[in-house]
Amino acid sequence: MAKDIGIDLGTANTLVHVKGKGIVIREPSVVAMNKKTHAVVAVGNEAKKMIGRTPANIVVVRPLREGVIADFEVAEQMLRYFIHRAIGKKRLFNRPNMMICVPSGVTEVERMAVEEAAMAAGAKKPVTIEEPMAAAIGAGLPVTDAEGSMVVDIGGGTTEIAVTSMGGLVFSKSIRVAGDELDKAVIAYLKKEHNLLVGDKTAEEVKITAGAAYPLEQDEYTDVKGKDMLTGLPKNVRVSSSELEEAMAEPLDAIVSAVKTVLENTPPELAADIMARGIMLTGGGALLKGLDKLINEKTGMPVLIAEEPLDCVVRGTGRCLEDARLRRILAADRW
Ligand code: ADP
Ligand code: MG
Image 1: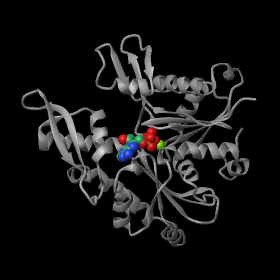
Image 2: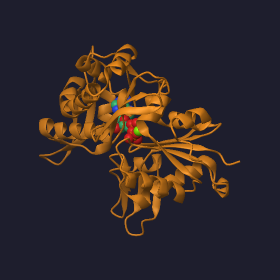
Image 3: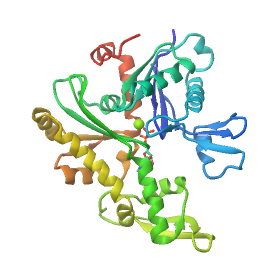
Image 4: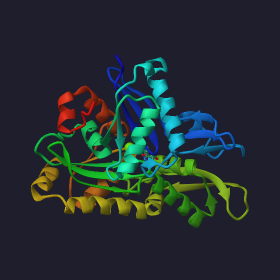
């Protein structure tokens, strides 16, 4: 029997869940390739280590940008690599069923591109599921009940916000502001305030180590290594979480505004359910210190952080693969 697999093809990370086994792959959606021959040099963790460190003939690319496939061929190769790693090449004679997440805002063409990449990578019949729905299921929200639940999934490229009830998305919104934009804001701030040049990877590390969305009880600090813009020489700068909060204010505000828009568009009965149950944060961005407090302060709603927020989406696909009733309710049982 072919193993059913669930895939969270994220802009930052790809996760693969194999039925009966659990999550077997959890790696960055990054590919290093030869510029001329387009031969793949490394995928995932190996490739991410190379960011900003490659010789001229190698490029490191992220085939998914803002939640959709930006580079189809590379995305397909990456998907194939992860699927082979997850279930072995032999299994592909016996093509597995696959459930893959797509952002809620994608067009039909974009959705089909994902299905095609999955087919090319060895799937029998790929089925797509909307990311916020998978995130909500993975976070343990009662999506099939006649009750409103709200999930905010903050990934690398997109923030997906949705209200679910009775197995459907009552309202959803996807914005192209998420982790990457926070990193960019950190880069811009360091340039402007400290004349310090840093790459994407360093900016992300700074954000994860000392970044905050809301004042912390005690400020945290991190030393940032970069290049002085004026002298061109290496330089160290110490930044605090309150500085980083200021640096990221704009993208954070965009995320909060989107959450508010969804709340404003939520029917009153469902809004009352959300008030009682709270807004659930998922995705890597949910781990940003103080983000729950910021959203709570700006919306007046209770805010919860999902357990292992980075795993919610793929966990959701895993639950769907194991639960035929759930698939029927979600109309995701075209197999
Ligand atoms: P995607 O679904 O787009 O692949 P993920 O849900 O995997 O995204 O989240 C990746 C994003 O989460 C990245 O922007 C990363 O920097 C961010 N992230 C991961 N851990 C943390 C953390 N502890 N604090 C803040 N941001 C984090
Ligand atoms: Mg995601």
